[in-house]
Image 1 (cartoon, one colour):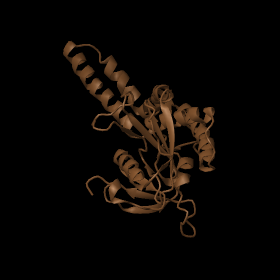
Image 2: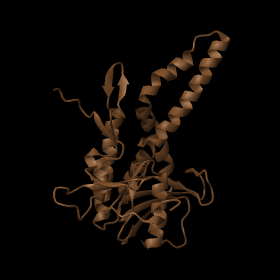
Image 3: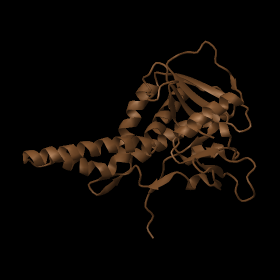
Image 4: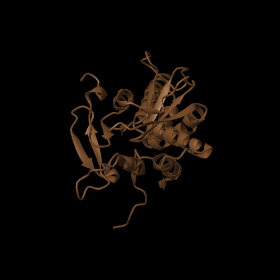
Length: 272
């Protein structure tokens, strides 16, 4: 059978997930991660290669050909981040270049998960229906509606392509704080690991002056972006702060989150 190049594409990079490999995994499960259902809290030890992926998710079908430009660009960003992640895990300070690379990775993670393309796709479908109704009422060809119809199959790839560019221009201007912890459970990640929070505001956005944008970088490291420079930033987060951050991450996830050692605390789960 002929191999289809890069058909299996990850929503959450498997190299990124390997940092959450259970250090006490049973024999034959080395490198596996604990994937936990957000609603039922059922958990399973899985290979990062088998998690959070889909066929041709970012492939753009151009003239009947598979355009892998977006998937290839994501691979470059993942490689940049991998270098930065290794430096952090070796207790080394990030260089200015690493900081830029982490910003690109954060922007990619904002745009590649299911939330963003579904939001944009929903908006386009609403516009498509409205355009079709107006065209029918006016008795004109539904050209706009037809154009959107042709674009929708590639919505995942096109939104990542545009979202990456837009988000990185914002994130790169924000202040980056890499927070660490020695907490036994560490930071969790998941199928939508970026959390955008404005305390007291139910509709947060990156441009808000009080926004706190977080992305777990490893079980021991967390990126927090802010427009402000706090007068006092803890160098090592205690359990209470880790639980607070993890509750945001879990709340942002759609179906599943990943816990380093399979730990689940009630403080992370809303309503429990």
